[in-house]
Image (cartoon, rainbow, N blue to C red; front, side, top):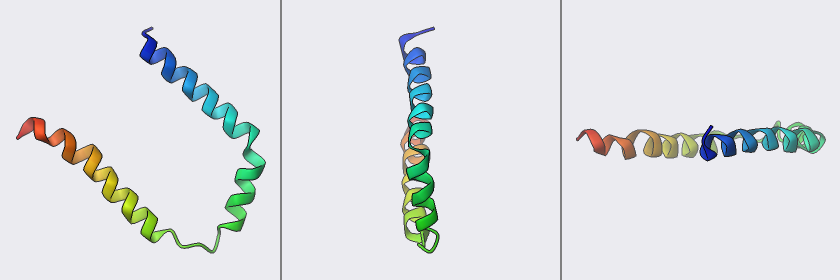
Length: 62
């Protein structure tokens, strides 16, 4: 296993542990945020996703 793969696995395990330790605060945040509209944030995130995932690698094929 390369150092890159080992680091990825370690990061994933630590991220799960971090969520587990902070689950109460996260769930309280979700309960308070029910009435908030996320349309603008979702649209911006989708646009950035398309730019990064589609347009950047596309230059290799043009």
